[in-house]
Image (cartoon, rainbow, N blue to C red; front, side, top):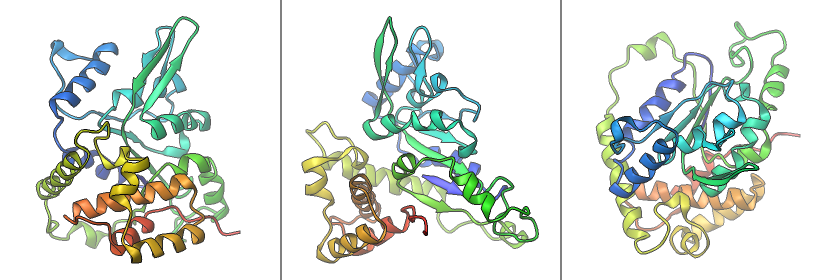
Length: 291
């Protein structure tokens, strides 16, 4: 997920809260997470980790720090966040080469670190959460605060992110600025505990669906699994076909819309993928630039 919005709109808070609604690690997952932490020398007291990792590297992080490397081919942040959350704040401030090095891990769920003395593969199945300002000054939508280069500064700032990387991000969210009235609103109707219960139920549906296969969740589904379980109904398929042309979806983007649609249906407790689920998934896709 990539959140875009002005400073102070709550993007970092949303990212930090996400880890709290993810389901608990299964024993097998806890072992995987602990093995990576042990290799990196971050396993405290020799005990298995029971909570999902949350890693938030600074935007000055090098490629080796993010994806792994060094003389001993140690795991990087993307592997230390395996089965948890990797939060990249101020996304365009990372070096472009460093960000593009994430393309393989985001696609395959693993990272290969090759050195003259070693060739190591580490797991890297993460929830990537990224945040960015719409432009360098951060106030593109506010004429009173925007810099003199708006809107050109926004195009220059956002162009630091490559198209192939953005194509691998399923959810593109605009986070609006908070007003004084927003800060005085009553608590939300649905608590984090209620959301976490809904997420756990959706994950349980996925576990049952893919039982007996190497796939654990919708994000890992491909090929026959993706076709068998994520193909929408007739109306949903018609909408997806039309949107694929309008949004100029790549084959990767098309498959990712199917996975998100299936997950939305799971969160709603629906056995099948309907048009409404496809429509919501499409609303999160990045819009192509206007020529």
